[in-house]
Image 1 (cartoon, rainbow, N blue to C red):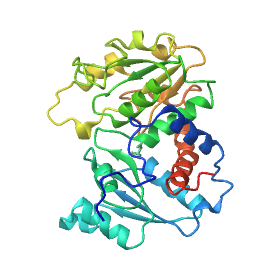
Image 2 (cartoon, rainbow, N blue to C red):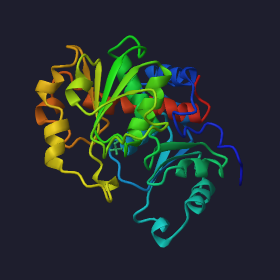
Image 3 (cartoon, rainbow, N blue to C red):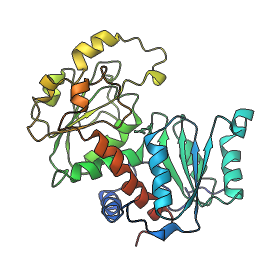
Image 4 (cartoon, rainbow, N blue to C red):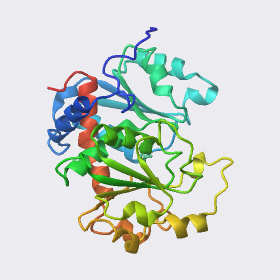
Length: 306
Ligand code: CP
């Protein structure tokens, strides 16, 4: 089937969503609890199609789907007919033909979920596409912040690290700016170019980590994405000395500041071991919150949000 509009129920990016749509999903997530399963999706088949490695996103979508009574099938690029050269769309048509009701896809190319959603008649959920977006990560992080802070409006949020290569950073920035958070970006030019773009407009940029963290309510740290650094020359030793989050640097933030990281974390690189495990760290909580949030996303995708 060929359509022009993305299939109804698809979640492809934060950018086109409005604050009300986001708030509705966050409210729905508050009603979801994997320890009290609800058979909202009994009989539905959730296809998890992963062209890139994943631990958190893949496992939490699977547990979310099963907590709602759905069946799940995992297809990885390695070991499937994708290795034989099957195209993205032919893989999508195949998964639809075997009975998928929704496809959750992670892909190295930006736009792959949109392409699939524009050619299928079932919802497609973006689990991360290239350097474009990772919408469910941004949603679960907003959900996590709102467990600790009354509102996103006016929050001082520092985002530190490899921002340019990060789909999570793009989704965070789209979401946080829709709720009038005050965003400061911090990183070296290789990870945060000077060029004005849709990506860096309307936010404050600094190259000094101390400036970014001072008086922040939330400090979000990003991994150095070695897999996306082809041609980028950067000294990791220099990066560590200038941008690694240490306890001394974290002390510059507000006393009740939250430390966040979408994972996977590389201890000793973008943050120290002590910071990863400090009382302000919400890193494990973010992972945990991924399950109810993804339960909400799957339920909404399949029209079971009430
Ligand atoms: N945050 C995130 O997407 O983690 P995974 O790559 O482990 O899914």
